[in-house]
Amino acid sequence: MSLLGIGQLEPETVASLVKVAAEVKQRPEAVAGTLAGRAVGLFFMKPSTRTRVSAEVATRRLGADPIVLRDDEVGLGTRESVADVARVLDRFLDLLALRVFDHSHLEQIDAYTRAPVVNLLSDLEHPCQALGDLQTMAEVRSLPGSVLAYVGDGNNVCHSLMLGAAMMRMEVRLACPEGFTPRPALLELARRHGSVTVSHDPASAVRGAHFVYTDVWASMGQEEEAAARRAVFEPFRVDRDLFALADREAAFLHCLPAHRDEEVTDAVMDHPRSRVFDQAENRLHSFAAVLLHLLG
Picture 1 (cartoon, rainbow, N blue to C red):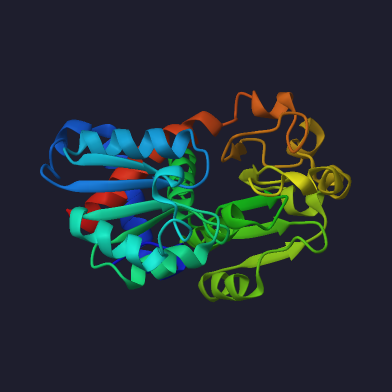
Picture 2: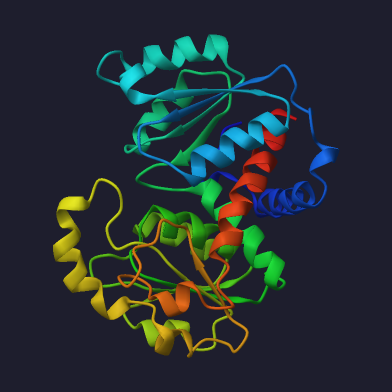
């Protein structure tokens, strides 16, 4: 079994991963050394801070050996075909986790390996981030029946987040500019699991919500679009006034890195109810849960 997207999982599996991640966080010594003798490949085509550090530390804490690979070493699809890279790495590794631009690279690698393949981020989904997000939200309040407002680009983070939240029976409200809504197929899939609405009005999405989430307006690989996107996304900035429309105990979430005073102001990023650094920490525990699920 691989984890290329949240949609591959059953709701019960998502709930179990969130539960295990919480247990790992509370009692890391209980799983220390569980995966001794295993080798986990960590491949990065994109720059990474939280993903690389959390994945490498989680792998070591479980007793497995992390093998970090950069694309300037591998040359995925350039120096060597994707299929050949997959076949070779499959002979060495018990699991291969990759951070790529093109989601199809993950699908090709998965087709040519027996070892599980984990999506550490692609242009389509960011499932490990969503699991850490769900863990963070579950630390604040029970997920079923809670309202999640996502404001901004209907991107890879949004795709995995809305799928996971809908599976956990949360009410999901998305506020995206026209032309920047989630992919229809993934939106339809999320709606099979729960309530997901899409609007172009941040205020209506945030009003009364228990969680307010945003992401950068231009992701890695979209730098040339940044100026044009800024003009479109300006009304979708999460500032103090917008956050004030949420529930009085609402938490603020951001997957990081944040472009302060673009998609979110300092007043919200540093708000007492901001949980962004808890999210960052929980990437460690959620990846440990994924490793235990696929290899344990």
